[in-house]
Image (cartoon, rainbow, N blue to C red; front, side, top):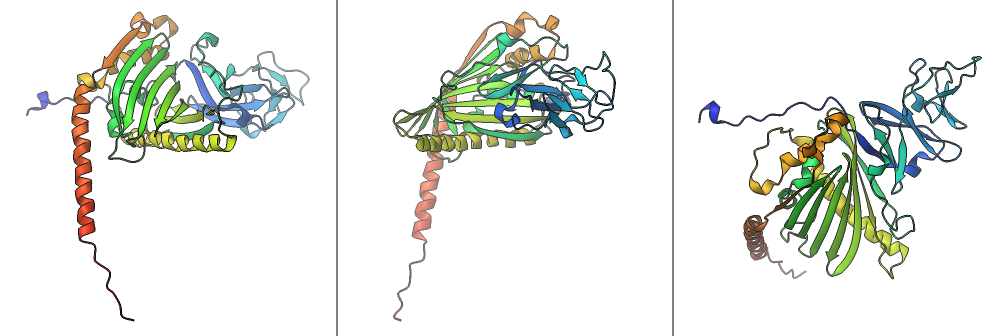
Length: 389
């Protein structure tokens, strides 16, 4: 085969800018301890703190005076004080006081990030154009969460190096990886993209020849997963395990830390089943957190070792990868450059028939081989010798 017939692998280059939209930086209460918190994000560092009213504030992490690291400073009243010269910065981005100076310079302002608290999590608005935060496209508040109908969040963070955060997004349309990576049969798989939302609808059952991930023959899932903007996904999961039905909510979100790194975060909460005490409900939530968490780690292993591919060679069952990437591109261009093909409604359903025919045969063959190996092990087991002493 000549070189002209070989398809080249285009790894492309990471975007030079970070996505416009809402980004989750952690559980809100984790910042309410009276201390400044440093968050690596968007190629720099942010400082987060709570004022005397409990309101959370987010500024650029470096003082505009002489570059002191505000995350190493101190919360004084409602302000964050720089450890270098004690310049006091308010949550509105203005310098409120310089203790050793008669007055504060009129232009003493720094970068402020608008905030919102959704589902007990702190979200911030980022836009390189400096636009006002669009509160109309915030992720939705989970009904019943504030009223105590769900268990406490199990929240996990994972630092990913050597991969751009857009590598996550392809999973929205990737039907086949659920079998190979997560050990499940996707029996139904559909996508809808519209506006700033991208949704995956899936039904699946676990593989009986595998353990870990979703690999359990008695586990059935109905999943609806929606990205609200570039980095915050809510996944509603109706689980049926051995006839026991549970409503699980998984939040998958990320913050870009650099061109080829990001912080992956995921949280899991379970709707409290009627009649169960709190201890049992929390135990169930932890079990599901472990299961779905192990599924995330399966993805993490892939992301840490793969290369980006800008020109993926696709088959029909791979789903609308290029359409999804056009949807995602809207967050990386100026607002004025967003075109209809990025935001118009698009629907696609993958025909899983052929895939499941092959997979069922493969799983049956795996189970047959395992049964033969177990039988062989039993046959060759050395019998115990009787001793007369």
